[in-house]
Length: 287
Image (cartoon, rainbow, N blue to C red):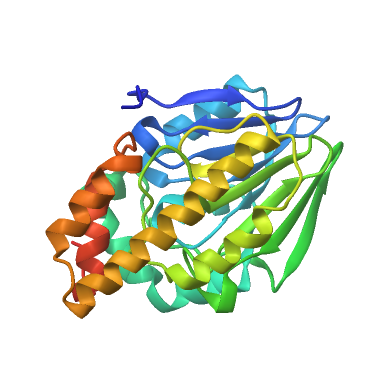
């Protein structure tokens, strides 16, 4: 089993990229620091805002110039409100914006229900939409920083409806968002697995020196990154095939859960996701 960190840690990936690695496979956040001390922040969760602010302080970032949402899910977008109040532009794909308009309010309320005191800390807290949106691709620049953003949700829906990747040109780093999980079971219950598989194919062929997933440990070379992308692809293909067997009556949900929790997948963290993913596929509900 992986030896998971119980607290977030800041990992310096390259000359100018820092990643807040989430504890026990929780969401990763990225900080791209420009030569003038300003920064582009990649994803932020309002429940973990103290971690984000501490990371910005420890990495010497003087000002956040942009906040990028890699996709619409709460753990990646819920701090939009906080940074919008500071005057920081929020950047995301048009797919992310559409998904937040369609389903975001319900998801925002549901995710904060277990922590109602957060509304006291942030009066007026509400879902906040991205304001700088792009259809297929765009570029963000700061001194010494060029980030290429690309919309990657195949047919409009892969892991999510807003999936975008970022390529940091100067430091040769690929930031994959939640299209890639490393060493943890992925969350599939919001996704379309066949489309997700199609989104992964071009990513498997990309070149980079380092790779940052949406959840799980970062990767320090292209060869290892390709192995992780293949593992992600094989996992999703295998899981989807077994889900179809449940639907056809050839296997039970328990049999598929046992399969996904054992064998090649026995070392993966966030094991609770397996049954929740299966439940959502069968019932449309995961909670």
